[in-house]
Length: 234
Image (cartoon, rainbow, N blue to C red; front, side, top):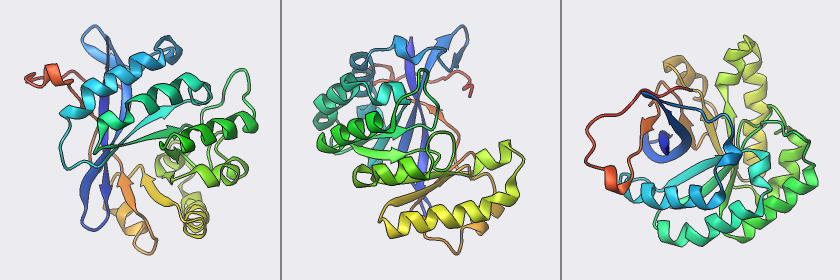
């Protein structure tokens, strides 16, 4: 069984939850875990789960996004399935996040660009996740810019690499890129007040991180009566 968990994204002024990033998790015994193989879930199954989940979230949320690895992103079935249901999710706006994960076998930037154009023409917002990391480097991001709605900059990647001294130069660069290309700019990985203070002189549209809110179980419409959830595993 699969379900979505959601982590809130927050507006800056006021600091308030306004959207969800959806994470797909699979039930394993008494917990929910990261699926070992996302390709086992066809686009139609993901779309159906969205239809069962989105109507149950808070009415003040304006947008939801789902992560797509490059293999899923270039699969026309995902674009077609999401386009087919996006009107049924209104007034919630549906976005997709292109992850930075490398693909095996390798997927060319031209394949990524063609897929991005398909999502753009389908009216589905494109978010480039973890800009500057993995395969989402500047060449790819600039190539995709005509189709991109938002950049996400991940502080947590610098922590995991024990390289926090590089946060400010990278933040300067990507904040500038977002400004000159007129993209929304989200900073994720916010864990404490120091992280917020670091951003005071930047134009940031949204914030996300464990310091603001952990992922929560999102019941389907038929499960809204449930009064308990299971542990979340990253």
